[in-house]
Amino acid sequence: MELVRNLTRPVRIGSITIGQGNPIAIQSMTATKTTDIDATVAQINALHAAGAHVVRIAVDNKQEAAALCEIRRQTDANLSVDLQENYRLAELVAPHVDKIRYNPGHLYHHEREKRWQEKVRYLVGIAGDHDCAIRVGVNCGSVDPAKKEEHDEDDPVTPMLESALDHCEFLDSISFTRYCVSLKDSDPQQVIDVNRRFAAERSDVPLHLGVTEAGLPPDGVIKTRIALEQLISRGIGDTIRVSLTVSNARKPEEIVAGTQILQDIASGRVRSVVDFGTNTLNIISCPSCSRVENEAFIELAEDVKAMTEYAKQHAITIAVMGCRVNGPGETDDADLGLWCGPTHVNLKKGSESLGAYPYDEILGRLKQELDVLIGAGTAN
Ligand code: SF4
Image 1: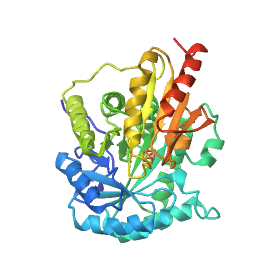
Image 2 (image 1 turned 90 degrees about the horizontal axis):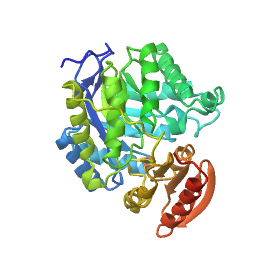
Image 3 (image 1 turned 180 degrees about the vertical axis):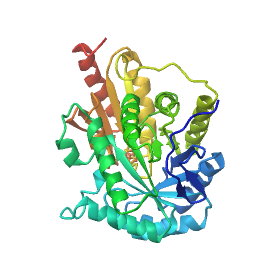
């Protein structure tokens, strides 16, 4: 089946070009410590061999930036760098990568006196000097605080959308068009909603699609499939990532899953839509990355899924996150949230903190809270 695609602008990322009807590119991200050069190169090469068109690497400090320089020397894969708060690392990493991802919601943390426009202008200068594309990566758990304040807290989609549109308008105004946008949420329905609204306003801007913290396979693959089926079948999307909570050795499964989803959509093998998060237990977990502070996180996510099996008929959302960078914010909307530190796991009920527990105690504590919710009638 020939899919009709939105006529987006071409954006070159190293040896590939997304947009303008080019094949939809598949991406992934490393989860090894970026300073562990051998492990990171091995993971990049495994992803590349599985068919990844672009591989993203998190860089949060100068040691990781230095490691990236060596990593670049050892791989031919197209590389993207993921910047969080410390956006000025861009000048150290841009010479070694093909794309820079910045998150509008994280541009506030450093140099608070500076306007975001000034910071984006700096990033654009660096990208231009080093032949890099840019991704404006908007994420539900870290939306621009100014945008959030302007909207009802029951509306998580509009602040994300407006933040992305503002950044596009600014980038266009300074004549930088080599960018794409992503709008990610852990709820597939919101991913569909926000990307459809964005594409209705900016059908020219290439979109990177994904469901963030989709979780463990197979559920994480199904959630992503639901969103991608709905969007790609409407011509929306130029590159994708399937974010899965899997061990480092299994990371290429993200590429295998993405390839399969795209093939199925292209040949019309679409599945019926599953209504996640409304009638049944919904476990979301981040895909893990180099920021994970204790590798027991993956096992914990698996144990949470197994332990909560008895509650699967209840409309309760449990979030399991790998670190303090996104964990505290991204668990706020869950009924129960866990985010992992080096020795303890932090437990939350909505935005309220219930304390931190050792890894061997957290499951029992979580079960107590789950039983309270079920008893309180959060059930269907
Ligand atoms: S929550 Fe932390 S460990 Fe998990 S993907 Fe996000 S940044 Fe990485």
